[in-house]
Image (cartoon, rainbow, N blue to C red; front, top):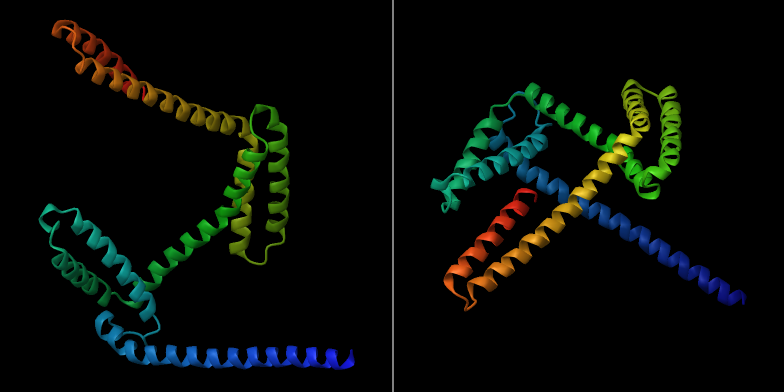
Length: 253
């Protein structure tokens, strides 16, 4: 048993040591690869995207902005009929316009744009827990009969975010927690209206689905009448009636 235990411990130690050495090797390889690509591509990006007024610290950010502008301009050109079948021309124009726009953008403008994306990311990530909690309450406690349970859930939500707001470490966290708490209070107060809206939305979807079924059935009847062997006069009169019904359901679709 002692020999077996010693062998097992030696095997585990060998595997862990091998994993540690492999991790160090992989880290070294990846760092060397990154350094190589930085050394190769940084001068190229400086030439293409500019960077005379700063030390190249924003080159990666300018590259991302370049890709965003390039994509948007290419999509815009794709909507123009003249460029519809001229793929290479679209790429040339999109790349040229994007390079001209990004190359002469100074660092202050880059920082201003980055700040906007930073605020967008903060807003999105801050609102995700609220959305998840909203759908959780609506899914677990649906309908008017569970109005009290949903209000109780929102009260718990408000209490938690109120505590986070009071103990926030900085102004940014404080603002996020405060406005999330306010949103929770609003949804708790207007819970009945929100539930009615969701119910009416689901009812509207079901109603549109039924209307579509009516339209499909009327189309089938029209085709049957068109291919039937009855007199043309009777056929036209019956098809007119079906077309009139179809127009009615199309209006209420």
